[in-house]
Length: 127
Image (spheres, one colour):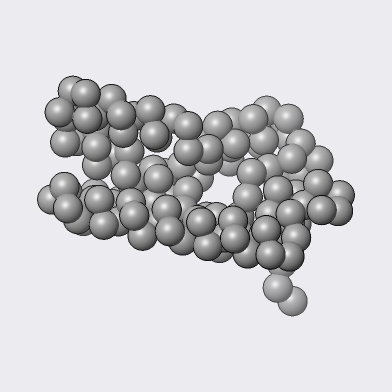
């Protein structure tokens, strides 16, 4: 690990883990009989957390990371099971699918040094 970034095989493993999370969330969503239009409408909703960067990089990173950590959607998923609430189940699975997609594509949790600095490595613009 260099400069706080995961590299090599561990980075690849984390990205594969993200793909597995995406696939599992989509299979769960299908199994639960949730409407696909809702998934399409909300799958990018967690990215609204980027608006926190308008306040400052520190606030932006904190809000973005909270919205892109699996903790809250897993708690929501557990709550949906306890309450037998299918809508909440669908929302939790959409959220997890988003996080899985981001990780599979290499978008990691943010550092306060800037939006492009993530635990999976710096985001690079293609030239």
